[in-house]
Image (tube, rainbow, N blue to C red; front, side):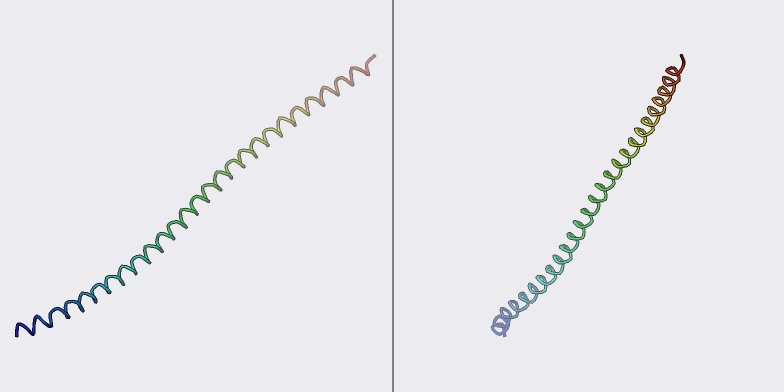
Length: 97
C-alpha cells in the first residue's frame, strides 16, 4: 500500500504543481495587463495635464501681451492727442501777426 501511495504521489504532485503554476501565470498575466493599462492611462493623464498647464501659461502670456498692447495703445493715443494739440497751437501762433 505504501509503495502504491509513493508511486502515485509523485505524478499527482507534479500535475497539481503544474496546474497551480499555470493558474498563477494566468493570474499574473491578467494583473500585468491591467497594470500596463493603468500605466498607459496614467501616462495619458500626465500628458494631458502637462498640455493643459502649457496652454494655461501661453494663455496667460497672451493676456499679458494684450494688456500691454492696450496700455501701449492708450499711451500712443495720449501722445497723438498732445501732439495734435501742439500742432494746433503752433498753427494758431503762426497765423497771428
